[in-house]
Structures are given as structure tokens and as C-alpha cells.
Image 1 (spheres, one colour):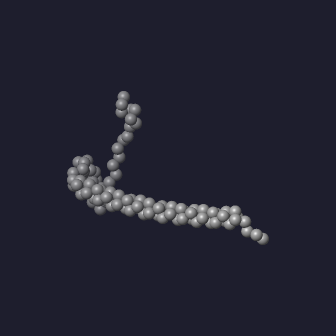
Image 2 (cartoon, helix red, strand yellow; image 1 turned 90 degrees about the vertical axis):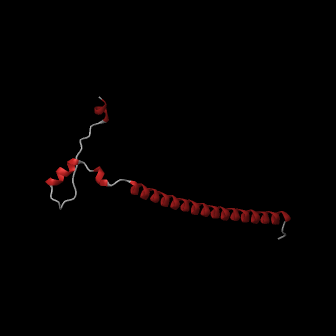
Image 3 (tube, helix red, strand yellow; image 1 turned 30 degrees about the vertical axis):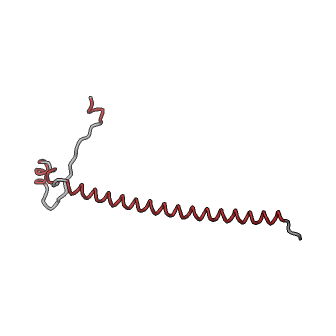
Length: 100
């Protein structure tokens, strides 16, 4: 069977286009992997910064004993000292009732 010049040209054109497509897809995979690594590094840096800010903020808060209410002292006298947990109940009213 004789080979036509057009058929050879089409075959090599197909091979060239297939190779270009594979190179393009490989390049995209490499770019996506780099982008994912960059995003992960940025997220880790953000989490470290957030932890530092939180630690600094909590370190700057005044002593929590300043927030105790005098009524807690009287309620703690009712309970034994072995129970460090107390229950505080506050009545809540809807916002519409407060605005009237």
C-alpha cells in the first residue's frame, strides 16, 4: 500500500499536537502544585500569626478576678468549697420589649 504524503503530514501533525497537549497539561499540574503549596504555606503563616495575636491578647487581659461580681461571693458561701462551679441565671427579654 503506497503512503500518501498527506497522510504522513497528518500523522506527524497529530503527534505534535498530542505532545503539545501533554506538555501543557504537565505544566498546568506543576503550576497548580506550586499554587497549592503557596496557599498552604500562607495558611500556616496566618494560623501562626493568629495564635501569636491570641496569646498576646490573652496575656494583656487583666486578672480575671477583677471580673467577679460581689453576689458570687455570697452564693459561694451557700455551696461547699469542694464544688468550684457555680450556676448563674440571667433573665432575657426580647429586643422589642426592651425598646418600648
